[in-house]
Length: 568
Image 1 (tube, rainbow, N blue to C red):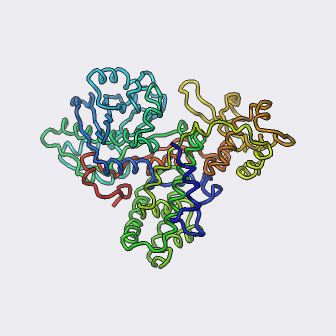
Image 2 (cartoon, rainbow, N blue to C red):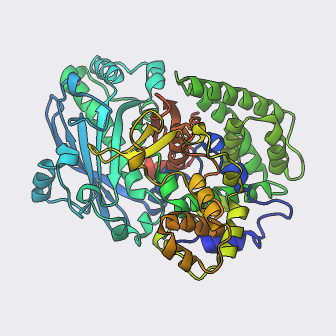
Image 3 (tube, one colour):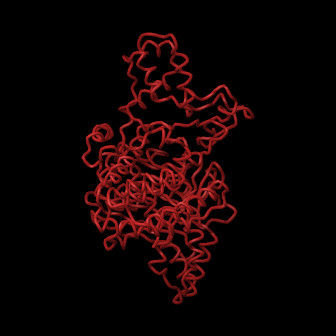
């Protein structure tokens, strides 16, 4: 599905968007520094998933639990929706400390998982047990939708087991300092290692929004991890052991360690990126257009402001870049709190607040406010989640009949930012994206220090479009005739043609410069997942928290609020 053309046509005629208010321009939104300041929102895929599960009354059962006192064995969690079931198959391992690593080259983990399409038989479980713990070295089938693995956060794991075994609750501050008992180091889907292709499930209503099976996998992993740590505490403490108190239990999320392997995704899926950003920007424009919010909507906003500030206060990082951003965010939220305390404008209060924020707050604060404003009006926002998928194959063919003159005009209109850069300067081409032979994962090399340019991947569209523009000087005729003579420019032509139809499809920055921070790419994507508490460990990989605060399966029917992402 690609709902964006309908979305694009509707923006200009949307009666919910007031005259004079438009979605922000790509040249504002699509800069890496701003994308690296995105926050989770109502449109994040975790939130979309749990809203559907709640609305449709899904039920989760645990038909298999054969895990011994040492924490080794297997478990199955089956989630039954209106039409079909999905089952997390989990394998718990006794991993020696010296084998525990978050690196992609690891060969052993504390737990390994797959999401099975349906209810697995005993034969399925035996087949999966022979393959899933091996991860890349094994193979799964099209009955499996995801492959994942996770490692314990040892310090917090031992603390929780010891406290529960002794009949006491874990220390709250210790829990908040880490935030998760296990962190995943990969959640693979979309045909990798034999898993089902995206096309197999794309037409299912529950899978239509992006990354829904991956989010379901992680949500069920979180349940398994909490059950496992309580199981280990009972094994150690016997009758003295206690479970975790429910409110404290929800403060645990699932960690994730993500590196360069994810970074190129936003560049290799331009139409999908466009649809994500467009839906978010349209949502913000709709909310800004509200002339007179209701009293409950104002109350909702006022109640959320301190919760957003609390979230920022609990967010910790030791990375210098993130520490500066966190300091700015906390200061911004103090300014926002003071501004709100002065009273909201009687007419169009959200737009008035937004216009103030554009000069009063940093990019971090502005993007936090964008997510906060979107939160206030679910009736204006939630339906836009249906516009965030994409049929990218439909946008892949070149328009060979387009004239070279028309193509050049599109370049000037949509890539002026790239044409203004000095691509001959060494710092502008300092980096090289390539794929490692050992793990078939993206890597970022130094062009002038390493012999890697020969294997460069096409992940620098700004430079390549600038080269295309120079090659088109003095050329007439059609795009088809030009490509026949110069096929090396096919990729750049496709980018221009896509960007001319999908305005948020391109990042308006140099993705190979010496100033590039790949963590900006990671944070932009992960914010759409719904991740929180970004903690960079270098400029190339980051730890995050997923589903922190979310209800567990046994709580979902009773959970009246969709605001679990904001701590009380």
